[in-house]
Image (cartoon, rainbow, N blue to C red; front, side, top):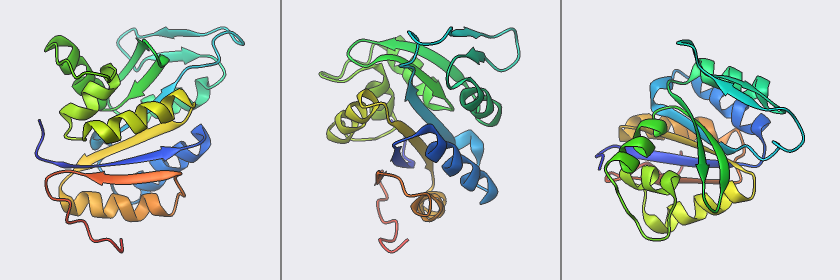
Length: 179
């Protein structure tokens, strides 16, 4: 389990989530500490494909431009079929935590592989269940991790992007409330 803090913001649309990522990048947040998760729920409407030939993973589908741009900014990309949630796309270091949880057979009752990855980041199970519910409702999760100072800065930037929910988690939850 990590000793860093994390902030999780829930966005109703991919446009809002993308704006938050762009704002964090402009604000100097380390893109290697930022992840995004979203469901791929339009497969029945459009041809969809994923591939990786040594370059960033490619995606076709309704949100192809969004995911292609995100995978160019963030480090790590994956597609998971999660029972109870459905097909999920992930970009950023959360991919590593999910794979680590799967490979390490981290079993946490009542949560998915996404949830196990979030728990391994130090996010409490009750919050993870809320985030999985948000994914099921076709929302997007933006997850940033870092020192308490980095998370305080991220919280300030995220606040101006109007997420539907935002929470700070970690051992040093002393991030100033007014930020």
